[in-house]
Image (cartoon, rainbow, N blue to C red; front, side):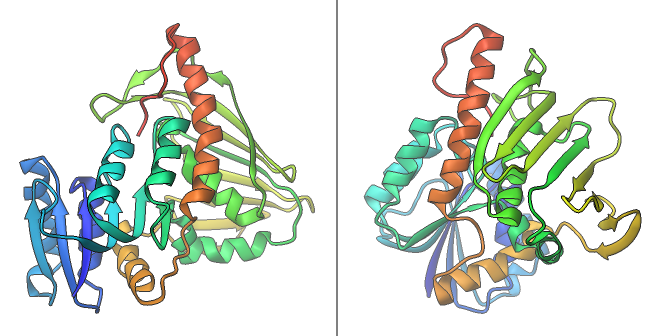
Length: 318
C-alpha cells in the first residue's frame, strides 16, 4: 500500500480526504490533527464520501505515527502559522517522496526559504492553487493564448483579498506565461480586520498587480459589492466577463463558455492518482509558487507594518 499523510483535518483537509476515496490505488492514509473536533468532523466527511466502503486503510492521529519512515505523498493543509517549522520537522523524521501544500504557503520570505530547503530532497512538491486543474479554466486558457497582454479586473465583496489573491496571481501566470513583477498596495484600506480564522487578518480595498509581459491584474474587495465578477480585456479589444458563481464566461456580451469552479473533493482523486502513478501534477511546483508568494508577501507585510506602525517579520494571513 502507498502511504498518504494528510496533515490538518480542517475544512480543506477533510475535502482532500473525501477526494482520496475515489483513488483506485491501495492507500494507507494517515490523518493528523491536534484538534479532536477537526478529526471528528473529518471522520464524518470520510463516511459521507463512502470512505468506510473503500479499499483504503485509514488511521486517525493526533501526531505523526513514530513507526512510519516513508511517506509517498504528504498533503499539508495546516494554517500558515508554524507551517515551515512543521515541514522542517517532518522532513527530518520521515522520508517524503512528494508534497502538496495549501496556500497561503507561509507568512514571510524566510519561511518560504525554509520550506523549500526542507523539501529539497523530495522527488517533487506542488502548491494547491487548483484552478489549473479545472476543466473550465483549461478551456479559457486556450481562448487567451497568444492574445498579448491582458487587462484583468476582479471585483467582489468579502471574498478574502489577503488569503485568496495568490489564486489569481497563479491563474494569470498560468494563462499568460508571464511572471509576477510587482504588487502595489497603495489603494488598500489602512485598517486590517480580524479574519474568520482566529489569529489571522484580512484587508479590504484594491491591489494592482503587474506581470512581466505587461499584463495587469486589479483585485477589488469592498463590503458593499454584491457581484463577484472577473473582467478581461484583450489586446484585440474583445472583452470577456467571467462569472465564477454562475459558471458562465461571456465574450463580447455573448455567452460562449460555461463551466464551474470544481470542489476540492472533486479534484483530489485525479490529482493524487497522477502524482502516485506518474510522478507529475498540473499544479505549480513549489519553487514556482514560492517566487509568486515572496513578492506578494513582501508587499503585504510592508502594508501591514505601515498600518500598524510595527516591525513584524511575518504577515498574519492564511
